[in-house]
Length: 231
Image 1 (cartoon, rainbow, N blue to C red):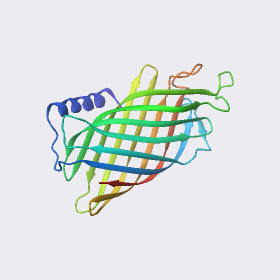
Image 2: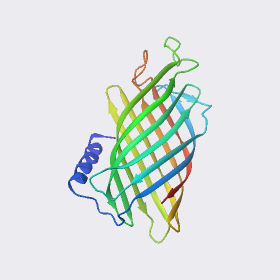
Image 3: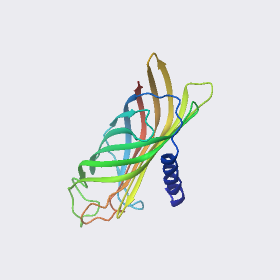
């Protein structure tokens, strides 16, 4: 994300705090989501990356709580385990967000995400460079900007969606984004969503002895399909 884009998100968040967001529904809602993710991965510098051939299929589980009080943020928690030959970690995202827009055609949320990397192992079982150490454990946190948007396709139950987390501090940069299409099926008091999309994690970790953030670049990307219940 360039500086202009980041400034736009920050300005939008500030505007949201000053002016309450419009919402057609004043009620409590809960959304539970399950995704099946089929990623590839690579580790190392962008010019000399090692492609991972054995990346386990992953899942993502999330739950979000929304309420009618404009001053307080809505809350979302997402869990994504990642495991490959050379690295693994459990990524847990704790997000507080506000609804900047909430209409029948467009939804746009902004907020902050605290990302926790738990049970992490980097360069396990070998080293990209034999002169560098292997098997380094880590458990760290990162603060990210959060944005989530959904656009309704008129006269259909289809929506285009996108979600983006980005943060940078000292030698560490984290990015997690996804985009795709979802179909919303109203069933009595529950909205059932079916979705398909593409997700990319692009993390440059500055946590490891003997590696700079470019050498410790981890990219995990691939298609996913999901199901959620909004009630």
